[in-house]
Amino acid sequence: MSSGGGSNIAHLTPEAIAKWPAPNYDNPDRKTWMAPYSIIWFAAGTIMLGMRFWLRLRGHAGRLGLDDAILFPGWLAGLMFTIVSIVYTEHGGDRHVWDAKPDERTNLVLCMWLGEWSFLICGGLTKVSILLFYRRLVSGTYSLRYKWVIWSAIAFTVGYTIAFCICLLVNCTPTEAYWMAFDIVYALTQDYKCLDTSVINTMAGVCAAVSDLYAVVLPCVLTWRLTIPPRQKIALNVIFCLGLVVVAASGVRTYWLIKTGSSKDITRSAFNLFVWAQFELQAGIMCASAPSLRIFFRRYLGGSYGSRITETATGHLDKSLATSKSITVVRDTTVTFKNGDGSADEKVSGEQQLWSPTRSEERLTRYSHEEDEAYAMSDLGNKSESSTRGKWPGQV
Image 1: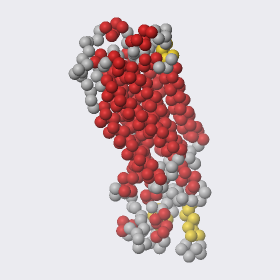
Image 2: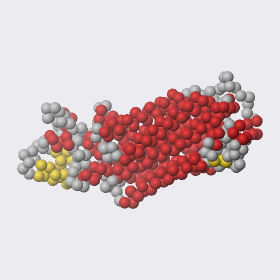
Image 3: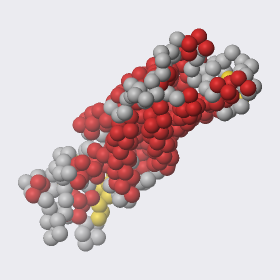
Image 4: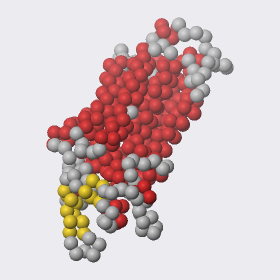
């Protein structure tokens, strides 16, 4: 029997249960679309993540880094959440709680417990990965204050993720009472204690929404001062602001998380909670992969940004630059050239002419606008550091 006045996931009193309608086990009202819904969103997130890794492995969108290493286990946790959401609905979570068979209810609450675990891990790792990407973005270009802002955001995300994971472990004593308390025999014969999760769930939802919000605001503030072409800056901010959709989804998910704790029809409230949580997780993974995806579409599906400079098999330039007279350096850096015969060096600093028809074709390929955009979209931090050593950003 319970020795405490708390509850694990829902406040279900004997009085509330007595008011349930008569159960309909044979032909219940069901919502059967969770499986295709979850699979579609997971597939979309997986495809975009796969493109990100593929581009980075080939060196087209920067190099693999710590942000990629953090995001992959986050994706695995997202896979776990997808599986749990499908299992939840296949074992009675797609119907009203009074239409779920008594022997299914403990498994349903166990799915909720596992879903909370996988959601916290996937969401936390995804946000840390995004913040580490911002860290790479400003490496060598921003003051220590901005870097500490990012590290503080990472610390907050890691801190609340660990804290709420611990809460899941200690919420009930023993831990299994979290789901076994919904078994009548267990509830009447076993001694257990559960904390009231209404406040914990509210705090968890608020922390997740706040972390989603600063994951959107930070890059907009940081990239505003980057010395990159205005169109690239706007493109970056548009991609980052797509995270506002995740913030909105987080708010709706928090509503259903709180409502589940007070609902008398816990399975239906939890169903909506799974719906919005799945969207939030996969949209977060897609936002984390969006910068690299833009490079994919531009590079492989024929898009372009400005004049693309390519070197053909015969060593001639692409026709798109045939009538061009010059290219201008827009970045405040110094580049050293060696003539084809190696006889002399030339330096270009600040906003000076970089190319004219008399310069070698080899230099043009190196300084293509495609390289410039990869610099801005994916690995600006590493390339900024390389430029301070006398190398042009994008040169490996």
